[in-house]
Image 1 (cartoon, rainbow, N blue to C red):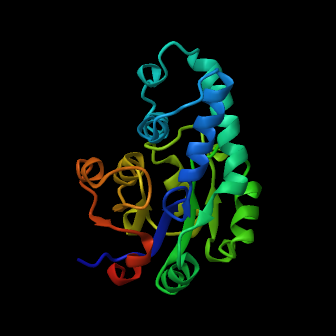
Image 2: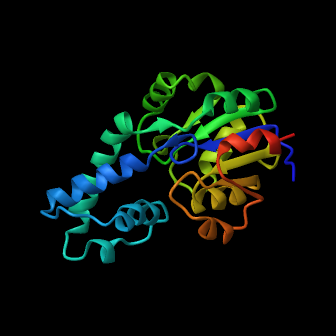
Length: 216
């Protein structure tokens, strides 16, 4: 199945860059601050999934002050994204191919200034491929609201229905559908195929590396 696209709107963490280490580092730091040393890897993976969907995490951290935990966790996560995230293999080559087919933009739920994300992308040699970057700082409503995606499509001067939204999470697919765009889910993040299939994206791929073959 090939998708027609004049614009491609990418998620960042789990899609363009591997952020698993940053999630794990944040969980270890927050649990350690609360006097808990050993952390189950399932719990470390489940926390960011829940946070992304605005679901409670009380049962994952029983007996711990949730607000205090989240304060430490989020600070540790943003600190870790600076040093612990790295681009997935061959992403630069993939983005180059895709930029020859469509206009590219990037959205992220990271609550940081756009300049910070652009700086990190420049360090990876990826910033030049994106004509627009929108962070959670720039929008009132995070995904699954389509706000960030609609802002990107507007800046690209492309209708949302002519865009493909690419992300690793259930909220990326929901946001894409809410924007009226086509949706591609990738399995390179923390969500399983089963979780993503429930959202009925147009395509599910192992990683963005496969995407150029599906865009026309």
